[in-house]
Structures are given as C-alpha cells and as structure tokens.
Image 1: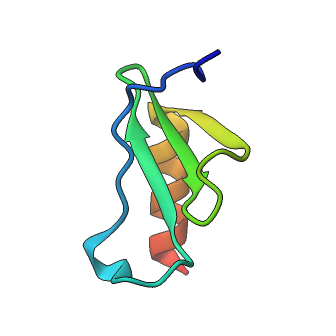
Image 2 (image 1 turned 120 degrees about the vertical axis):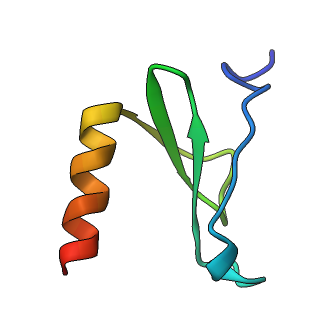
Length: 62
C-alpha cells in the first residue's frame, strides 16, 4: 500500500549540501510536512502554516 502523500515533493535547503543531516520539507497546500532527510520513510510532522511560520521565526531568532 502506498504511503499517504506519496506524490509529495520533498525538498531540503540548498545550504545543506550533500550532507545527510538535514530536515526536508514539503508543501501540503494547507500545511507543511517535515521529515528527517536520513529516514524518508520514518515519522513525519504535519504543521499548520501558522505553526511553520512560528517555528522558522523562532529558529531564526536563536
């Protein structure tokens, strides 16, 4: 059985280079998907757009 959202295009930051330690994100239209780039079949997070904006703003402020 295919995974839900199997057609979703996951991407990582261009700044992550070829290293395996990265987070990948996907545009899920009404939300943002987040997963570990080293484990693409592992657990995933689904964040609302507001949660994504808050998370990225918090990380940028560190």
